[in-house]
Length: 431
Image 1 (cartoon, one colour):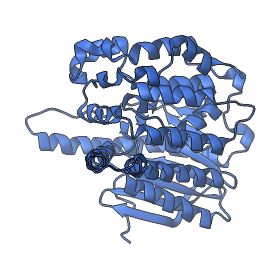
Image 2 (tube, one colour):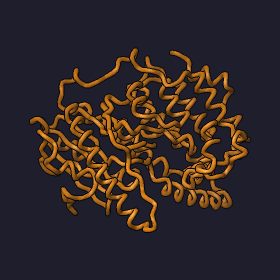
Image 3 (cartoon, helix red, strand yellow):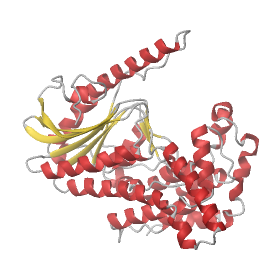
Image 4 (tube, one colour):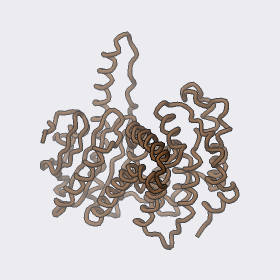
């Protein structure tokens, strides 16, 4: 298998250097490389305590496409086989301005092919079960994500599992994977966003479950149902991040000169330099938390955690944003052209996503909560939405960076959504 030099691009460069005091790299446990994308896991030592450090790099937006997800699964299995003598596992990736979730282009291709097959099957008189089976690719990917969650949570019974959330905003799967860890270290410039309700699905890799455990029902509802970007300081205040490391420099910006190629090269160099500088701040702190006594890890008691909104405020915002007619003046227009209008009302939410989230959160009872069972419910709720007709529009609009036209949902909204009064009661009910 191809080897990556310590002097290659991405976060592995720091991990395989001698720059961090008291840190030693003891050699690879697992290596997967696909052109510029890689997932590498090294055995390391910090202050004489041994652990494993996983580094994922997928420029330019670090989405977790299917090959990368397979590498995560294989790599975590390799750590499990090597776990004897290890005390911690750190999940780490590049500290770039943006971290996407799954590969939306891949999902769009699969969905368009599926819808064409569906037409042919329907014309041939296929059964509902045969047609439903066409969407199995979505559930298969979700199950792989949940399998990753299970493997990481199993390792957490033997090792201290931490995640370094460096760089900027994390969307979808790139937020859900670090949430699988017990302890999260954030970058002051970044944050997380469960953006799935803007597309027509919901988080399906255990993200809602993990936020419920870390931050409670109100904050889980706010993050999932509003699809808002939550900055690092708020994530710490609600208990998702254990610590936020101040990063005193901004992300680089691409120059716009008469030489676009030179601009692109200089921007890539600036990103690489920023990645290394950020890593020198975040990674040592993660290592310190990996080996310190448990009592020294910053953790909020439930009474200390803040709520990002009340259930009434969440319901009012969702009611406004789920009605496609409220977006009549801006349907299909580029988001950059209607920035001010969207800032006032918020981006449109898919009604089927909101309905699925309402049902899922209404079923949460902390007295009888079993984490794995709830993760399975989350997966099933997300998988069902791959069949919804609004998913195609949500995918296309997101990729094209335009305002989606969810008017086709108007005939289904009565089935998808309950009244505002019912929504306030069901989600906000204290059990």
